[in-house]
Length: 271
Image 1: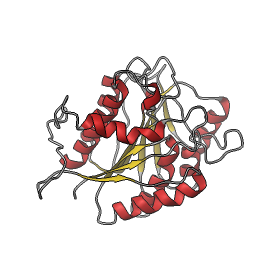
Image 2: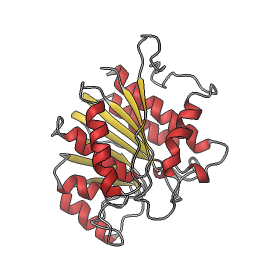
Image 3: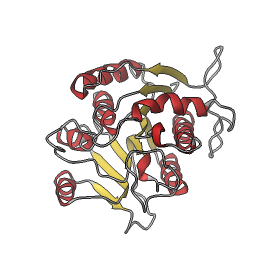
Protein backbone atom coordinates (compact mmCIF):
# COMPACT_ATOMS: atom_id res chain seq x y z
CA UNK A 1 0.00 0.00 0.00
CA UNK A 2 1.07 3.58 -0.65
CA UNK A 3 2.18 5.39 2.53
CA UNK A 4 0.42 8.60 3.44
CA UNK A 5 1.58 11.74 5.24
CA UNK A 6 -0.76 13.84 7.35
CA UNK A 7 -0.29 16.98 9.42
CA UNK A 8 -1.84 17.38 12.87
CA UNK A 9 -1.38 21.06 13.79
CA UNK A 10 -2.40 20.82 17.44
CA UNK A 11 -0.75 22.09 20.62
CA UNK A 12 -3.76 22.61 22.85
CA UNK A 13 -2.53 19.95 25.31
CA UNK A 14 0.92 21.49 25.78
CA UNK A 15 1.84 22.14 29.40
CA UNK A 16 4.59 24.75 28.95
CA UNK A 17 4.76 26.53 25.59
CA UNK A 18 2.57 26.71 22.51
CA UNK A 19 4.15 26.40 19.08
CA UNK A 20 4.16 22.75 17.93
CA UNK A 21 0.97 23.36 15.92
CA UNK A 22 3.19 25.24 13.45
CA UNK A 23 5.46 22.24 12.88
CA UNK A 24 3.68 20.42 10.01
CA UNK A 25 4.11 23.37 7.66
CA UNK A 26 7.73 23.97 8.63
CA UNK A 27 8.72 20.32 8.30
CA UNK A 28 7.08 20.09 4.88
CA UNK A 29 8.81 23.28 3.75
CA UNK A 30 12.31 21.95 4.44
CA UNK A 31 11.38 18.45 3.26
CA UNK A 32 10.78 19.87 -0.21
CA UNK A 33 13.30 22.74 -0.10
CA UNK A 34 15.87 21.00 -2.27
CA UNK A 35 18.75 21.09 0.22
CA UNK A 36 18.48 17.30 0.58
CA UNK A 37 17.27 14.58 -1.78
CA UNK A 38 14.48 12.07 -1.26
CA UNK A 39 16.66 9.04 -0.52
CA UNK A 40 16.80 7.41 2.90
CA UNK A 41 20.01 6.15 4.46
CA UNK A 42 18.91 2.59 3.67
CA UNK A 43 18.66 3.41 -0.04
CA UNK A 44 14.92 3.82 -0.56
CA UNK A 45 13.77 6.77 -2.64
CA UNK A 46 10.74 8.40 -1.01
CA UNK A 47 9.77 10.95 -3.62
CA UNK A 48 6.13 12.04 -3.31
CA UNK A 49 3.73 10.52 -5.80
CA UNK A 50 3.03 12.66 -8.85
CA UNK A 51 1.35 12.03 -12.19
CA UNK A 52 0.56 8.45 -11.25
CA UNK A 53 4.13 7.57 -10.26
CA UNK A 54 4.96 5.43 -7.25
CA UNK A 55 5.58 7.36 -4.05
CA UNK A 56 3.73 8.60 -1.00
CA UNK A 57 0.63 10.75 -0.76
CA UNK A 58 0.38 13.95 1.29
CA UNK A 59 -3.11 14.35 2.74
CA UNK A 60 -2.38 17.86 4.01
CA UNK A 61 -3.28 19.10 7.47
CA UNK A 62 -6.35 18.17 9.49
CA UNK A 63 -8.38 21.11 10.74
CA UNK A 64 -8.48 20.65 14.50
CA UNK A 65 -10.19 22.34 17.40
CA UNK A 66 -7.90 23.82 20.04
CA UNK A 67 -9.64 21.82 22.78
CA UNK A 68 -8.10 18.36 23.22
CA UNK A 69 -11.40 16.70 24.08
CA UNK A 70 -12.86 17.92 20.79
CA UNK A 71 -9.68 17.34 18.78
CA UNK A 72 -9.46 13.72 19.96
CA UNK A 73 -12.39 12.37 17.91
CA UNK A 74 -11.39 14.64 15.01
CA UNK A 75 -7.97 12.95 14.87
CA UNK A 76 -9.44 9.46 15.32
CA UNK A 77 -11.78 10.12 12.42
CA UNK A 78 -9.10 11.54 10.13
CA UNK A 79 -6.67 8.67 10.75
CA UNK A 80 -9.39 6.03 10.46
CA UNK A 81 -10.38 7.42 7.07
CA UNK A 82 -6.76 7.72 5.92
CA UNK A 83 -5.87 4.09 6.69
CA UNK A 84 -9.17 2.52 5.66
CA UNK A 85 -7.51 1.08 2.56
CA UNK A 86 -4.73 -0.49 4.63
CA UNK A 87 -2.16 2.23 3.96
CA UNK A 88 0.50 2.99 6.58
CA UNK A 89 0.65 6.60 7.74
CA UNK A 90 3.22 9.11 8.99
CA UNK A 91 1.86 11.99 11.06
CA UNK A 92 3.56 15.30 11.81
CA UNK A 93 2.42 16.88 15.08
CA UNK A 94 1.62 18.81 17.00
CA UNK A 95 2.26 17.98 20.63
CA UNK A 96 2.44 14.42 21.94
CA UNK A 97 -1.25 14.30 22.78
CA UNK A 98 -1.90 13.40 19.13
CA UNK A 99 -0.35 9.94 19.51
CA UNK A 100 -3.25 8.74 21.68
CA UNK A 101 -6.03 9.26 19.09
CA UNK A 102 -3.76 8.04 16.26
CA UNK A 103 -3.09 4.78 18.09
CA UNK A 104 -6.77 4.48 19.01
CA UNK A 105 -7.62 4.62 15.30
CA UNK A 106 -4.97 2.06 14.35
CA UNK A 107 -5.75 -0.33 17.21
CA UNK A 108 -9.15 -1.18 15.72
CA UNK A 109 -7.38 -3.13 12.96
CA UNK A 110 -4.08 -3.84 14.80
CA UNK A 111 -5.03 -5.02 18.31
CA UNK A 112 -1.57 -6.52 18.91
CA UNK A 113 0.31 -3.28 18.32
CA UNK A 114 3.83 -2.66 19.65
CA UNK A 115 4.76 0.99 20.22
CA UNK A 116 8.38 2.09 19.96
CA UNK A 117 8.65 5.46 21.71
CA UNK A 118 11.64 7.86 21.59
CA UNK A 119 11.44 10.69 24.12
CA UNK A 120 13.08 12.51 27.01
CA UNK A 121 9.88 11.94 29.00
CA UNK A 122 7.82 8.77 29.63
CA UNK A 123 4.59 10.77 29.02
CA UNK A 124 2.69 8.30 31.17
CA UNK A 125 1.33 10.53 33.95
CA UNK A 126 -2.17 9.57 35.01
CA UNK A 127 -2.86 13.29 34.92
CA UNK A 128 -0.80 16.48 34.93
CA UNK A 129 -2.15 19.47 36.81
CA UNK A 130 -5.55 17.79 36.81
CA UNK A 131 -5.56 17.26 33.04
CA UNK A 132 -5.87 13.68 31.75
CA UNK A 133 -5.66 14.97 28.15
CA UNK A 134 -2.24 16.58 28.68
CA UNK A 135 0.61 15.83 26.28
CA UNK A 136 2.30 14.32 29.34
CA UNK A 137 -0.35 11.56 29.57
CA UNK A 138 -0.93 9.86 26.18
CA UNK A 139 0.67 6.55 27.07
CA UNK A 140 -1.35 6.23 30.27
CA UNK A 141 -4.50 6.55 28.15
CA UNK A 142 -3.19 4.12 25.53
CA UNK A 143 -2.09 1.45 27.97
CA UNK A 144 -5.09 1.61 30.30
CA UNK A 145 -7.38 1.16 27.30
CA UNK A 146 -5.40 -1.84 26.05
CA UNK A 147 -4.62 -0.17 22.71
CA UNK A 148 -1.11 -1.67 22.56
CA UNK A 149 0.37 -4.95 23.73
CA UNK A 150 3.87 -3.48 24.28
CA UNK A 151 5.39 -0.06 24.90
CA UNK A 152 9.17 0.16 24.41
CA UNK A 153 10.77 3.50 25.34
CA UNK A 154 14.23 4.92 24.54
CA UNK A 155 15.96 8.14 25.60
CA UNK A 156 14.08 8.61 28.89
CA UNK A 157 15.81 10.89 31.40
CA UNK A 158 13.06 12.63 33.40
CA UNK A 159 11.03 9.83 35.03
CA UNK A 160 9.34 10.87 38.27
CA UNK A 161 8.40 8.45 41.04
CA UNK A 162 4.79 8.50 39.86
CA UNK A 163 5.80 7.73 36.29
CA UNK A 164 8.00 4.85 37.47
CA UNK A 165 4.95 3.45 39.24
CA UNK A 166 3.00 3.79 36.00
CA UNK A 167 5.78 2.04 34.07
CA UNK A 168 5.59 -0.84 36.55
CA UNK A 169 1.79 -0.89 36.42
CA UNK A 170 1.64 -1.17 32.62
CA UNK A 171 4.74 -3.33 32.08
CA UNK A 172 6.50 -0.67 30.03
CA UNK A 173 9.97 -1.55 28.71
CA UNK A 174 11.66 1.74 29.63
CA UNK A 175 15.30 2.20 28.59
CA UNK A 176 16.67 5.17 30.50
CA UNK A 177 19.50 6.80 28.62
CA UNK A 178 21.87 6.87 31.62
CA UNK A 179 21.92 3.04 31.74
CA UNK A 180 21.14 2.15 28.12
CA UNK A 181 23.91 0.10 26.50
CA UNK A 182 22.63 0.51 22.95
CA UNK A 183 20.90 -2.86 22.77
CA UNK A 184 17.39 -2.88 21.35
CA UNK A 185 14.30 -4.93 21.97
CA UNK A 186 13.30 -7.61 19.46
CA UNK A 187 10.07 -6.75 17.71
CA UNK A 188 7.35 -8.62 15.88
CA UNK A 189 3.93 -7.97 14.45
CA UNK A 190 2.61 -4.50 13.69
CA UNK A 191 4.73 -1.63 15.02
CA UNK A 192 3.94 2.03 15.63
CA UNK A 193 6.89 4.42 15.97
CA UNK A 194 6.46 7.69 17.87
CA UNK A 195 9.35 10.16 17.99
CA UNK A 196 9.20 13.11 20.36
CA UNK A 197 12.05 15.24 19.05
CA UNK A 198 13.03 16.32 22.57
CA UNK A 199 14.32 12.78 22.96
CA UNK A 200 17.37 14.13 21.14
CA UNK A 201 19.86 16.24 23.02
CA UNK A 202 19.04 19.95 22.53
CA UNK A 203 22.36 20.34 20.70
CA UNK A 204 20.84 18.36 17.82
CA UNK A 205 17.29 19.72 18.04
CA UNK A 206 16.99 23.13 19.70
CA UNK A 207 13.50 23.76 18.34
CA UNK A 208 11.51 22.05 21.09
CA UNK A 209 9.55 23.40 24.04
CA UNK A 210 11.26 21.24 26.67
CA UNK A 211 15.06 21.36 26.50
CA UNK A 212 16.36 18.35 28.42
CA UNK A 213 20.17 18.01 28.26
CA UNK A 214 21.86 14.64 28.12
CA UNK A 215 19.78 13.20 25.30
CA UNK A 216 20.19 10.92 22.32
CA UNK A 217 22.31 11.86 19.34
CA UNK A 218 20.69 11.95 15.93
CA UNK A 219 22.74 8.88 15.01
CA UNK A 220 21.35 6.94 17.98
CA UNK A 221 17.80 7.86 16.99
CA UNK A 222 18.45 6.73 13.43
CA UNK A 223 19.95 3.49 14.72
CA UNK A 224 16.69 2.80 16.58
CA UNK A 225 14.66 3.57 13.45
CA UNK A 226 16.89 1.39 11.26
CA UNK A 227 16.74 -1.46 13.80
CA UNK A 228 13.01 -1.59 13.14
CA UNK A 229 13.77 -2.01 9.43
CA UNK A 230 15.86 -5.07 10.28
CA UNK A 231 13.08 -6.79 12.20
CA UNK A 232 10.28 -8.97 10.85
CA UNK A 233 7.61 -6.35 11.45
CA UNK A 234 4.99 -4.29 9.68
CA UNK A 235 5.34 -0.57 10.37
CA UNK A 236 1.73 0.59 10.27
CA UNK A 237 2.24 4.12 11.49
CA UNK A 238 4.67 6.69 12.82
CA UNK A 239 4.60 10.21 14.17
CA UNK A 240 7.12 13.00 14.70
CA UNK A 241 5.96 15.36 17.43
CA UNK A 242 6.88 18.29 19.70
CA UNK A 243 8.90 20.35 17.21
CA UNK A 244 8.40 24.00 18.17
CA UNK A 245 9.41 26.23 15.23
CA UNK A 246 9.33 29.30 17.50
CA UNK A 247 12.49 27.99 19.19
CA UNK A 248 14.28 26.61 16.16
CA UNK A 249 17.63 27.87 14.84
CA UNK A 250 18.46 27.94 11.12
CA UNK A 251 15.81 25.23 10.48
CA UNK A 252 17.97 22.69 12.34
CA UNK A 253 15.05 20.99 14.06
CA UNK A 254 12.73 21.25 11.08
CA UNK A 255 15.42 19.44 9.08
CA UNK A 256 15.64 16.76 11.78
CA UNK A 257 11.88 16.34 11.42
CA UNK A 258 12.12 16.15 7.64
CA UNK A 259 14.85 13.50 7.80
CA UNK A 260 12.79 11.46 10.24
CA UNK A 261 9.77 11.74 7.93
CA UNK A 262 11.89 10.39 5.07
CA UNK A 263 13.28 7.52 7.12
CA UNK A 264 9.82 6.56 8.43
CA UNK A 265 8.33 6.64 4.93
CA UNK A 266 11.28 4.55 3.80
CA UNK A 267 10.47 1.88 6.39
CA UNK A 268 6.96 1.66 4.97
CA UNK A 269 7.88 1.75 1.30
CA UNK A 270 10.57 -0.89 1.66
CA UNK A 271 8.39 -3.18 3.79
